[in-house]
Length: 446
Image 1: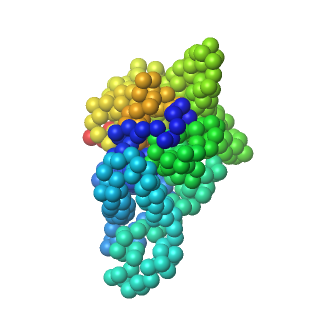
Image 2 (image 1 turned 45 degrees about the horizontal axis):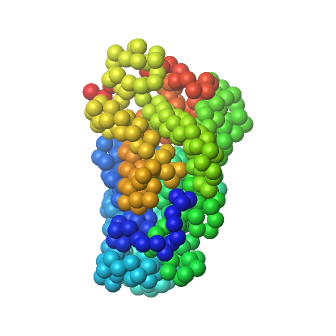
Image 3 (image 1 turned 90 degrees about the vertical axis):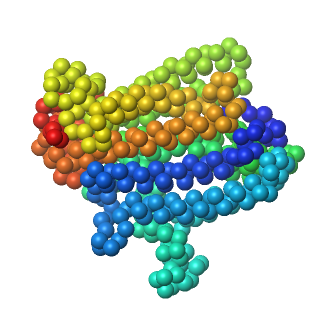
């Protein structure tokens, strides 16, 4: 997709040390640690994430908290990852020939990583049949069987754009699918690594650890993989719209316009990917036209997504003119209830989100100008997007908690994710701020 030369070309220094399959695995393992930190901090500030996603609470005070179980699972993944990477370094010594010859090792780790996520605990118990509690493989490996089972069921549902009902964990499905959009490039790189492993080049010197060939399997496959997470979220938005239309029309539920606007946001990712793909193997005149269209598509996607993060996902009032004019009881552009941190933190996160939203749109298309062939630069941008999404989760979950605990009668609440005390779907105006403005929406925390 990036127009890389043949797979057998000389590897760059970064790829000699950190080949593509290990970079993919690193981001996945990092995501588990990041989720643990999300759970831990939100638990400390009294936000009950399991209740929001309809995950069963601990039946006994002797059971470890959810974040501790996540940390233990992340430790297992990290330990196996570190062992595999150290063995790879020990046998390859950054020698290009050896790096390519040992490509089976990182692929084997990816297989183990997948198994630890999705293989049922009953099967692991059969493979490692120590049945007493002290040597139970689940105890030794700290594999959270219920959490992994829940993840499997969610992945099966959202893989086809499905969405649970509010009482069955709709917010969890939305959260996971939103996270997947930030991992679109990671998923594409995973496909590239597997494709190169299964289809080495004609000279036989290619492989999963060779220079990434992002046209492997055809020029359309990688763009389709990149577009898949956004297509999943788009379908979820349309499902929510359909549910609102089939339900009784009321002031609280509205007519579903906000779900259509949200679907449009995810649709804006498609032109970014399409115009980037069309620029390749075209004449200079055609390429220039596609480039101009790509720039416009990037700007629309970045700014629309940034607006939605701030105004809809986080319920901040920065773009609400009426609320700004009457903002006497809360910090400028924010809201009254701020759980995550002081106002300065919210302002910093807003600025960071804008910056990284723009960067990610460029990366999603596979274009980084003079850095397009620098694998280290590509990896850095992927890492920054994962960091942005990690920060986003704190404020998205906080917003859902505020909506849920304020109750169905609280004016101005948008319950697009489903709440504990009832769901208020949206305002009847497509992109206007919620009824009641800021008055009565939040209460002081002092």
